Length: 428
Ligand code: SDX
Image 1 (spheres, rainbow, N blue to C red):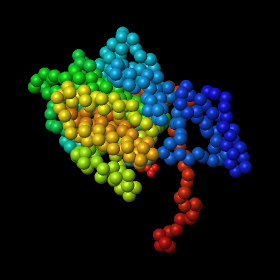
Image 2 (cartoon, rainbow, N blue to C red):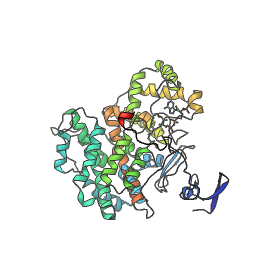
Image 3 (cartoon, helix red, strand yellow):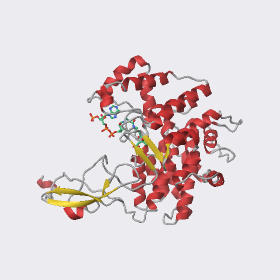
Image 4 (cartoon, protein in one colour):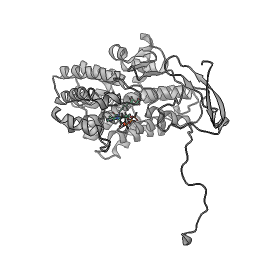
């Protein structure tokens, strides 16, 4: 932490506030003592200028379109790493050597099964339940089964529950899909990779062996890497806030899943593909771009814009490249990809989007890939939640391990009625 100070002058008073420097990125003004000194709050409803915590996990430079996980650029990780290695990196801070990675993979693969009674939870849902509704319910219910790893003050409990969550999300997500199509659940096969195991549980059937195209396995694993963590986004902040009360990790991750579901956040991948389907052909694009610019029209270009990125989301760059790899591998094509490319080109040459620095984000192209692989749009956000679980768990561990950690309790600007006396109903 540096020794710079900020001076705030208000109401004839001046307040000296410490300024802290990170290893990279904006400095922060420490306002923890501001209310005590000034009896005033700061005001930042959408947290547009607020750092909620100190973290060493992920760094985003929104102006430059840079995303680092423990210092490693997302493009390098997507190109050369794999999801369980990135998971180890996020959890532990360093890339593992081969022996350590093999041990981590062994540990994760031995937590992939669910307690057999959890299967009953699925039977309580309608077949057409949204997979995110099932994920919220089943993940929250894990705390009813794994009492032996919910003492958050015990690092060993935190380690086991972290591994359980990372390992069981593919099983839970695959079962949500199987349930929705009336097919039997498949148990995990620990001889497969993390992603290969997920794909078999999702698209395999008991009646025959499941063959997965290596390029599709690689693409899915890369998509998981691209969704692993992303600083203090809405769902991660939800997990941190839930965890700050001492809630068990399964409940905290269920809270993160609920927040991710929103179309402004993780639900945008489903919304973006539905939008492309509604647009249909490139000749319809100008009409939708005009709608997106119309303040009186609630329509927005889904998969476009970002609170932090005011440049191209580096994940979207990798995602766009991956579309072509999957199309080539599966020998498929989807005219919506051309529509998406044309929409991006027209939007990025339109003053409205240029001035507001609205670029494609991670959700713009992902749906085209997932649809080509065979996922229904309703599964897209469940896949996002599957991958983001390692980020949520790593951020949760970082918060719980912080000796200065306190329960999160924001204040407000109150604009309601001032005190008044109760009036009995007969006198109103
Ligand atoms: C994710 O935070 C993260 O890191 C999230 C995420 C992660 O990995 O965790 O990256 C994942 O959630 C990506 C974002 C997915 N959401 C979408 O694609 C939905 C469409 N995008 C927008 O809803 C919006 O861009 C947000 C929610 C992503 C960001 O909203 P902000 O930062 O609150 O910005 P804003 O709504 O204040 O927009 C600024 C201006 C506004 O115009 P003005 O009021 O200033 O005139 O840009 C406009 C907005 O109307 N605008 C858009 C737009 N996004 C913003 N106009 C048209 N289309 C859009 N997509």
